[in-house]
Amino acid sequence: MALRTYYILLFILAFPAVLSGQTTYTEVVAKDGDGIYTLLRRNGLDPATHFKTFLELNKGSVGKDSSLYTGRTYLLPEAMPPGREEAKPENTGTAAVNTPATTSTATEAKNPTAPNILEIPLFGKKYARLEVKSQQLKGAVYYLVSGHGGPDPGAVGNYGPYLLGEDEYAYDVTLRLARALMEHGATVYMIIQDPDDGIRDENILELDVDEICYPDEAIPYSQKERLRQRTRAVNNLYLKHKGAYQRMLAIHIDSRSKGQNIDVFFYHHENSPSGKKMAESIHQTITAKYNRYQPNRDYFGNVSPRSSLYVVKYSHPPAVFIELGNIRNDRDQRRFVLPDNRQALANWITEGILADYNSR
Image (cartoon, rainbow, N blue to C red; front, side, top):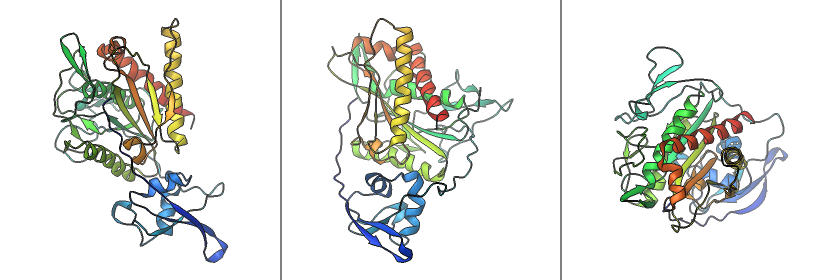
């Protein structure tokens, strides 16, 4: 996974402030690069719980799109006592994937015959018809971000005479994951989309540059702008679904020395217990699958914090960053070159997500 990491130094100066009514708050001074979610997380507060209270406490001091002014002092919400959590509106759980057409909003899936049958053009002709098998994930919203795309193929490996592009294989696994989640009633947004690929069952996936970013934006050449674009898309949708159960997953393939065989591993934000919990749930599921189907080999994939990853650091919903393997290693290549293996990865990740959601 060819991804440079950008470091933005965020410093918070904190000291107590006493307001009327005997309520004690903490004052913080916003520095360059601070946003509400970054500020809350760095001070040990859950953005999903405290976002609304923060806005109420700081009326008139928050900029457009909930941005903060550098150098301005803000009040942090105090931790809510039990039974005082903010009310969360009910989510309808309607499965939705944005189509690759020119529409700028998420398009509801077509229902041609029965309530449990959906038609999703983004999945391609073979897989467009989808049966909703359960409502286990009703009310959950997932943002799926496959790595790179457009002018950036990501990591590239050699497979005989062929080139393997990270963005093509990560995208195919992500599409399969989206479909599997929707089969269980989830609302799913594909943030990176290809207008004509769909789910492919070939071993060699042809490299192209026609991917777009939700809702219908060309992917820029600048790596930093690409990361900002997809993170902004997720965060805008997060505000639209505020109050719902929301999670983000970024799917990538790493690039290391050709001889290094690695297992699927996971990153989360160090201040996101929800992100860590989902990562651990998926990791436990994949570990169990390896123990069952490959009992003679050890599984070395792990879960660790890596808050410096841009999409993990700045995405509003709890996020998990997944590396599927080493695109240059022969053994790892079989993990995603074979379409059945790509489907197995999507199925196993889905099982981990289901376990995470059902244990909330």
